[in-house]
Length: 192
Image (cartoon, rainbow, N blue to C red; front, side, top):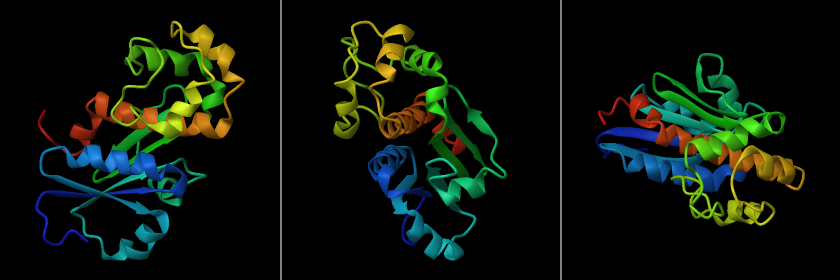
């Protein structure tokens, strides 16, 4: 897998529907000092997991009903973010990033987006390392008239967003927060 590469070798495992997010996460992780990251499908990971050593790092994207690897990892990983249906956590060389029950906390979801400056000054485009310039997610924004991002406009637009698109957006925002809050560096034990 990473035989000739030095540093931390990271596999980002995700179902096909989160492939784009997983590739961006792998790209962002590879920018960190001495880190090499790649995206693998759940099947690819499951087929080669037996050959992994304790020196390999794994990030699983997607909740426990979308990704069986996340389901397994949640047995021993304590979540560090559980706001607005967005989640991430890690333990040792394993990490998870996912969204679940996003529709249950609309106000909290909108507040997190604003709190972490995840939209541009015009409140029209996402700006995080994972959500920024993501065409498949930007189509969601056509439905949301962001004049001023506060909980109320988000709640009004909430009904027009499909649960599938909302979960994908929330998963990407969970990944954004994993980087923005410095958790990726802490997980990988990188001095910042």
